[in-house]
Image 1 (cartoon, rainbow, N blue to C red):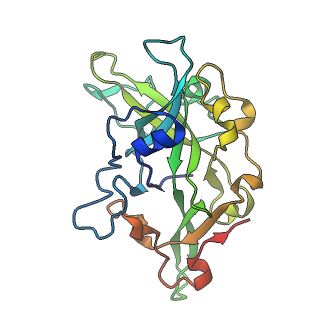
Image 2 (cartoon, rainbow, N blue to C red):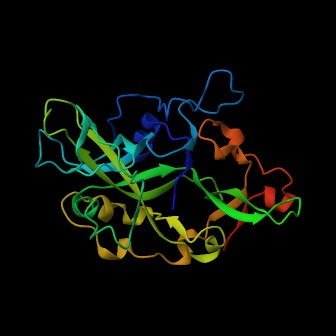
Image 3 (spheres, rainbow, N blue to C red):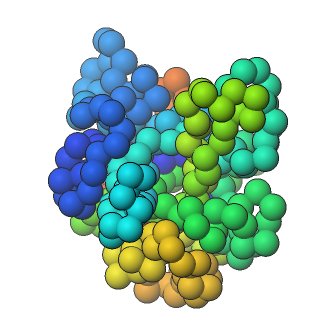
Length: 277
């Protein structure tokens, strides 16, 4: 699964990098509003969020036609969405707000095409979710030797610091009783079986989408090729490194680059980035 991740992407800069339109309405990505809390030392770049959690509003990349010029070629667009997909058929809990339900922040790539909550999105609403890296927890022996296992957080990222783009799905939800209210855009991150030595950390991993597959994945006019939803080969994660980090990430209240500090007591090799392949 993928339930926490880190990102330093700024929507305006990301739009320039990808030759995309920034439709977020903000030039500095605010993350969840707590990424650069007042008084926190070294909060990092403006808009950076080192502890993205479900229900946060996150950056996504889509390719869509212009609403007023549907015959024009589709363009890449940077949009902000709620992480946790809300199906189009979800009921309203209060005017303009969907009722609380299971947070659909992940979707299994091998089942999404037939799952009621995701199958429509697989056909025509696919996106990319940019991130610097993601976290997973591994049960390890207690450092005191007490025999009680502890969950050690690990951070997975590209060895050269390149931004990662994960395959996602998105939805547009509207309150059927209040069509005049702004729609809610929401998304989910696809996951697949872990491959290579990433299986040492967790049996699932987010589905990375290589740049060469973007055109097919983001095409708004055609379904996604089935092979893009299959478990990738180990080569896809050959540049991914993992390292144990401090348990600060365990609380969504904590944020900032210090979350990526080496875990207390980690050896020199563990504290550095270790290739998993």
